[in-house]
Image (cartoon, rainbow, N blue to C red; front, side, top):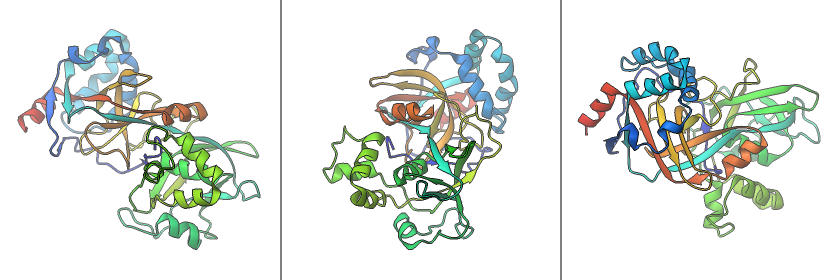
Length: 347
């Protein structure tokens, strides 16, 4: 999405088989000395994020690593040594990478429909099945197929924010009568994601370098009729679920079923990057990043070995930061030593 090209999705990805098929992507082993800025990073912060999902990595290559990982939290030097001793950097695919950003919106809403709050977030209907196509966005919004079925979770005041909340896949709703409701991805209608930003460029409404989440929102609000039709260019429709037990200090739930961490969690393509694996990220652009991150999420628009979405956090400023990111660079996968050599031997 980057604007608006991302679909944050909670998916049931098997944690047992963390091998890489890689498709046709080439793999190259590097040294840690090849990683720009490696020694300057906060490896202890990266290790803390890695530990959040380490218990889910049950493959034999990963379990002994996860067993000793907590001991490496003693200091920055022990954390860096942990990664250097037990992993090897492997670059899968050919740079340049494409990095975008996503965030957890914080909006205002109501548990009941009012003149101000009239646009609902819906729970998944029981007839919608994973992997099967249901009604597309246009049919859902024009036919009233979800109305009056008790599927409304919360009501928002802006159709544009509903759309972008579906793009991000999770959010915090500050209720008008007090309290906060956390919502997360609850399923989708099975239709592929189509970028509204790309369509605006194709039609000549925006320039390629002008597309951003903020720009798309402004254009849709300034053109209500055409804007509503433009949002329906994306046939994918996301349903939500309440997250009543998610503490306020925790990030939203990622594809591994655990909270993700601001500026340490990545959304990746699991066909090339195993969920739970450390990733060395070298993002260029106006705000360069050299940082060890953890692959803990996925996205419908995140496809390819050198493709990732950076989680920028919660709220309006995080949204501004995430929406401005569309940068090149490279991403390097850290694999357990035996797995790294096995990948290269399979080349």
